[in-house]
Amino acid sequence: MRPGVCVAYSPGVTSTLGRRLGLSLAAIFLVFGVIELITHRDDTVGALLFWGISLVGGGAILLAGLTRDWPRRGVEQAVIVVGILLGTNATVWTLVVPLLSLAVLVLLFRPAPALAQ
Image (tube, rainbow, N blue to C red; front, side, top):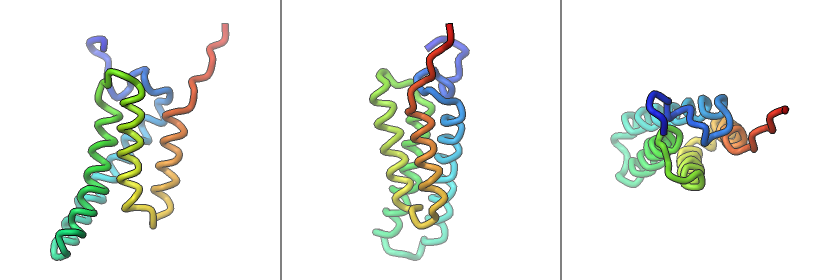
């Protein structure tokens, strides 16, 4: 990576809009996860693990996939997909977050348009 280049906007991902939406989605997962862990603190350990792993873990993994400089593009894509799947697992009932997750995947992994010569 070149010095002074922000990793969050690396050329490995084709869409800046997709990158920004992905970072927003990671923030949503993390905030929802912290809120759920606080509001469900009297629940069973299994419920706390579900919320923690799904939302906090998914948000953290998605954030890592979007901001870390991965050695290969395939690793970056796999990490992003795992983070989105984990986070969406706990928010599927909202209907909005799964649609946002799908939009992020489409924007991040669509082929870059060919440049006019």
